[in-house]
Image (tube, rainbow, N blue to C red; front, top):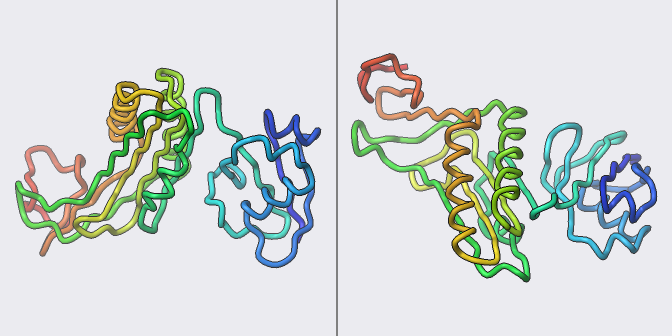
Length: 228
């Protein structure tokens, strides 16, 4: 299989070129492309691992690549490493924490938003999250970059689930590492508060006999009054 790897910043300088063409056999993923490139260019071993993108979309390390794909290796940005993602499967909290781990981190703050039953109305059976994928990812990246610009963080990771979630499941996770706890707490709170107000992700509550899109109810309507 033929793929093209696109490189930026320190990766580009270590390789000596902005793109590299690779031929790989079997199941090909961004992680395999990164490993092969490090074998070919040992200078890359001095740097932390990248985030991955195909086209204009971030993808996980195990994303299956097709013949002719161009995968971009994205080095950690100035101010700290950044990871954002929208996922349909359960959020892997341990992996998220590994993404922000740093030897100079004296504090790691983790926020988990979980699906709860509705104390103000009918009992929620499940939630359904919908996102404007491309715009949501771009806005999450902007939020992460704002965090790295405002606080001396060493890593920031944002992930949000989409699709159907049962009560008790994790819908959103924010992890921030920093040298001291004050910066980590402040940065983490800013990240989740800003994500909730700016990222185009919508939540539908479903209960027995009805449902509603939270925040988009007709004026004056209360939970449970209208079946969608």
